[in-house]
Image (cartoon, rainbow, N blue to C red; front, side, top):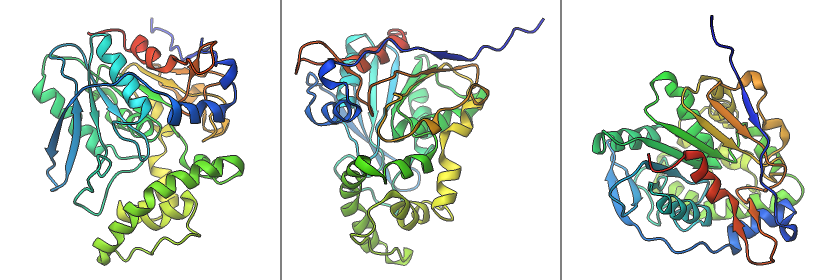
Length: 326
């Protein structure tokens, strides 16, 4: 007799600090004020078949389960969540390797294209590289925000052929147009303005370097993701327009095809999205676990009773879910 299919949606044990109960405080403190212990790593530049490159940060550890870390929009190895996960994974006996998306390591990438929410080609390249170098070592992956969306899309595309042991997606957008709408309203527009500000110089440099693309110059009026993604992200990466980009790259449609243990952590008060992005049980593969803390903000998840002495729940939760050195 066939076994019943069980869809797992669990209640999270996370409880926010009383002094950071607001989702914006969770988000901003985690991003701007949190201080994780310093990490040490070795860097490597990987040349890609298309003439571009990826910059990696490797753990010094020589053994243990490999964990590929994928950052969010405009992030890098200095991002607090990246340093926190990297350090905790090492302490638990695992080997993190952090992949900078193209153009995010401090040096512009060579091609007109860079990265986006549905970029799975570079993930696949990295996973294959890790397999080739460490054929007898299990490999997991953890993605944050944009990186989480791209990771989930990759897992769904791979289906039963996915070579990863397990995966974690932290605060993935899941439905891109919902996030773009939310970030264009109210207080959330501050996040949008900040992120687009970080992107603006890179976009302008691309426009000047590749005049044949005929990209419009970003003006001060181009202050929302709908315009930026329509005028830059979509045409540079081969999409018809912003609607085509958002439709193809929203990860929620891929969740039912995932065939490895995958844990999604998403705060119900995330200021970047609305509850509209949360998948129904019918959209989840039996291999996907959905953890929905009531609080936590966007990649926040800070607890602790003493003000300014935070406890970073997310770092420990990632280690707990991955389950040890392997």
